[in-house]
Length: 453
Image (cartoon, rainbow, N blue to C red):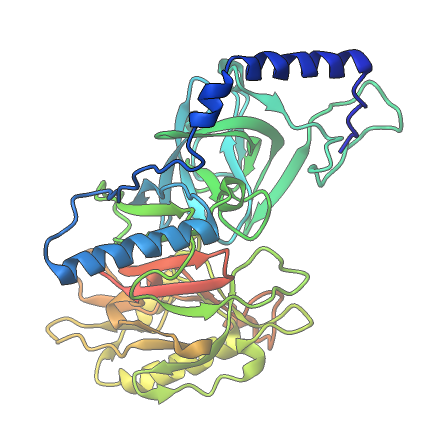
């Protein structure tokens, strides 16, 4: 803090004159008759009319004290933001987001397995080797926004630097470019600083990607990364936690939405079981790793080695939760253990080998005319939290009345590898249906409870 200058003699004289005038306004008689103490009435004030019932009145006082204590400890917090969450036929879930001035609303896939928020962008957007036509893709138009600026490649936030530029060159693009991979797909473009609008709240200088080129994409929606990175949607919004409840796994583009909640409040959510997030391996810093102790199929504990359940120093193993992955994934050895036990417990049903070969999933069963009984798949996490996934939430049933049902989890078991890079188990959104799921970023933990969504 800068020091204050010493007062000059003229300023001291002016100050003395001011006090002289002030005190001269009071006569000596008035000063003598002025009481030495002043008494003011103190009246209790309630936010609402207090109850005449003594017990209810005590409850009101306790509630007011609790609210006051929370305010003193955590300060004033914003109310949660809620946005519709829609299931899509391709297996993802989307939310509407509005960027720019005036706002341009598009649908964004909710993906906790990635970290960047980006949208197809400009009239020059192209999609290479895609199952969709670029002409059918809704896109953001930067030239229509008055609040947009480009993120400079010289900004410390830009992790790619100034590409294809010589030192001290003046003839090079100043934008911060990106290239992102998603399984077999990819997106390339440059970052913008733009306004993100919610009802009653605007977030300025939000970093959003302007994707010019897509590769091997299978849907037309933009992407909202929710992973553990400064670029992700919840981190840029500075929320303490976010939560969702997925309400459909039939992939039918239903308009019966659930809700995604951005929460600025701290503390426990009623009824949730919590387990801590694990420290990420250096090679995979953006995922949400969970500390799973064991898996059960029905009442049978599966003999899965700990090296598959916990992430190792070599960046293999462990379990992550990923809202952007439909059916989930199991590494070959894990998949073999799970499906071998599944076949034993499902032996009373007729296998459909033809369906397994045709769709590449399995095991598959024909349930025609039979009561369907599929054992629960149970995840036991550190801290005692237990997630029970009923059979109808991890088996995929044919939409046509054929009686066919399959275990749809993806795997690389055919490659006969002990390990592949990355997590050994991915808990996808298919197994998260009808669960209230919370990512508590402030307290570094994951919460959930069974709930009809």
